[in-house]
Length: 364
View 1 (cartoon, one colour):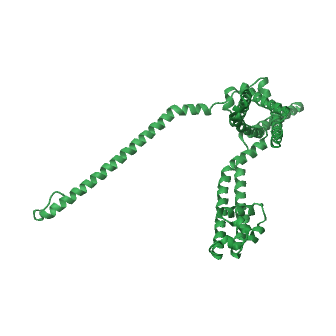
View 2 (cartoon, helix red, strand yellow; view 1 turned 180 degrees about the vertical axis):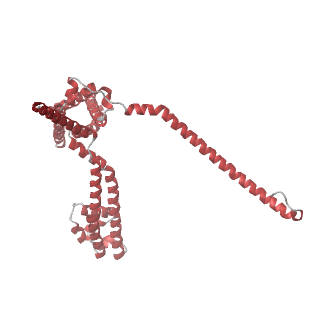
View 3 (cartoon, helix red, strand yellow; view 1 turned 180 degrees about the horizontal axis):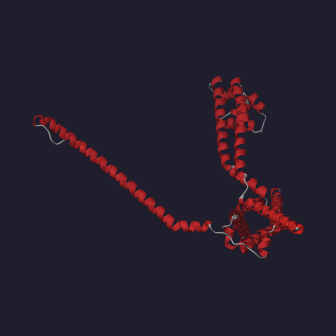
């Protein structure tokens, strides 16, 4: 119908044909773009489905096999020894003794006194105990040592034992080198000696209450990050308000110097220094009354009082509530503890039933 034009309107028809041509070009261009976008979406969808199908076909069986792995029951004298409470308590005592040795060696090093050979030999003996413990567990659990419910703690124990043995090897190699070539080995030993402090964390795996506390602390790290951000923002906000008030109601040039107070310069000389001063005031590092006397104007003093009130009443209570709520979420009993409690309860129930049936038999 667009191509049929009346003869009396040739000029208008020419204009309408030109408009129609431009419109047709624009529409065709849009259609081509739309078709190309749809083709791209189809290609991406096809690729996504292909990747999804590949993962389902090749990776899912391995994941299912991995999650369904269950360690068979271990029997024998060695398995009973490793699973016994006496063995766990003995290892815990060695861990505490190792922490004591580390403290004694550090005291000698800080005082500039050579560490006696006895303490070095005792530390090596504790390392031997840790290595023997890991070897015994590997003999009992074999490869299940790395995929059982205690995988993280087992990897931690294995890493500490391997680092301890590597440290001994480095010491032997260093002693065989001339004194001028020992600087590199000494730097490595300083880095490895920091790992000795981590051995004390192994005692958390022995006692359920300590492990629960460690779980709550680790679970609160994200809350600690956002709480630190909130604290920094609050300190920044009130520092800027206090300094802005001092700048408005004080001299325009040489503000800090004109006040004639070195304490004011030391505590509120900059934004970062003001933030540190406010942090000290609310955390008990110093009495906030001292900082209140330093401020020159009543406006800035009023802001400091508002900050103390707001922080003590609002921020601390909110953060405490968040931490308590987060700790309660992570303080739920672990599967291992629940399994132990359930096993003990079942044994007690079996004993009660056995005693009940025996009494019935005697009565009858």
